Image (cartoon, rainbow, N blue to C red):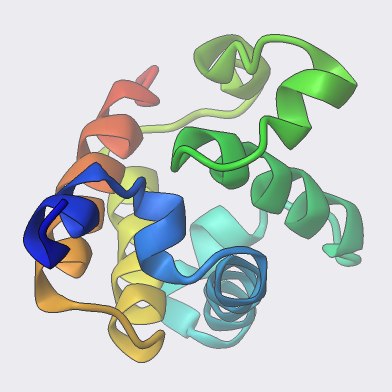
Length: 132
C-alpha cells in the first residue's frame, strides 16, 4: 500500500492524532465558548461546570470521527437532535457554536485537508441541530 493510499484509509480520528489531540480540540472549544463574549448565548445553555459535557462531547466525537465508540458504549445511540430539543437552537446559536469550533480547529494542529473536511462536517451537523 502506498503512503497516499494508507493516509486515505485512515479515519478522521486517526488523521487528527487520536485521543490526546481530540481532547485538546474539545477543551479548546469549551474554553473559547467560556471566554469569547460572541458565544455568550450558546455558553449560557451550559452548566457552569463543563467537566461532564466536555467528557461527553469527547466521547461522542471519538466515535463520530471514526475512533472508539465511547459514547455509544456508555449511553447508546447519540440521538443528537433529541438530546438538544430542550434548547432553542436557531441560526444565532448555530453560528456561535461554529465560531467556537472553527477557532478551536484553527488552533489545533492538523492538515489543511482535514481541517476543511471537519469544518464542513461540523457545519452540516450544527445546521441539522437547529430547531427554531
